[in-house]
Length: 133
Image (cartoon, rainbow, N blue to C red; front, side, top):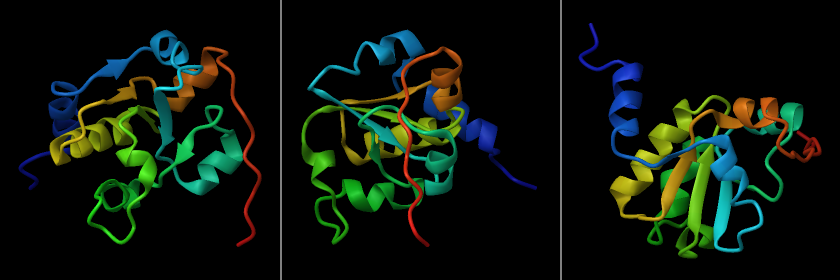
C-alpha cells in the first residue's frame, strides 16, 4: 500500500506553487521576461501543437536541465526569466514546478488547466513538425 498517492503529491505541490489561469498565462505570451516550458512527450507536441515559442523540456530531463552543475544544463533555466510550465492537464507541470522551486528557482509557475485548457479556451497555438525517429 502506498503511503502517498499521486493525488497527494499534486495537492501538496499546488499548495506551494503559483498556478495561473489561462487568461493570466495568455497575457504573458508577448512578455520578453517570460518563457513557456512544455513538459509533454514529443509525440504529444506533434499530435496537439504547443504554445507559441514554448521551450520543450521533456519532464524526465527537467531537473538535469535546470541544474547548472549538470552536463545536461540548458541556459534557458539560468536566464532569470519567469518560467511558465505546462503539460496536458496540469498534473506533471504542478509536480515539475514544485521540483524546480525546491531546487531554488524562484520565478516559476504553471498553467493549472494545462495545454488542454489552453486549447479549449481558443488561445493561440502552433504546430510542431514531426521529428524523424
